[in-house]
Image (cartoon, rainbow, N blue to C red; front, side, top):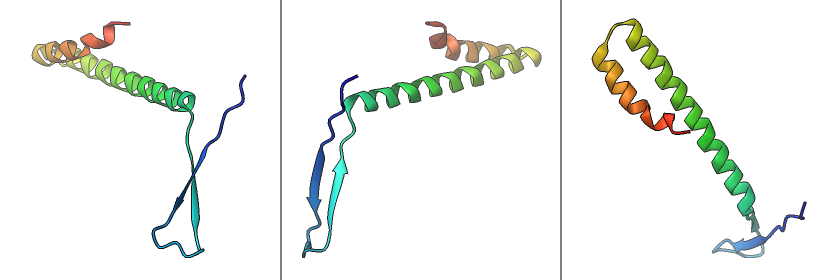
Length: 80
């Protein structure tokens, strides 16, 4: 595994008078990508489970219109 390179950007407060210097650590591209993929997967799972529950409830209630609306909304989740 390669070492991660850490870059610090020093930004001075406009009224700097020898008091404060802040440094900001930039996140690597790999960490940004991994966190975005994790959040996408979590939101995908949450939305799919929510739609599953709503579809099952519509079937239990014999609500055909709600079932058709939810099944149309569920179609993108079937492309795996």
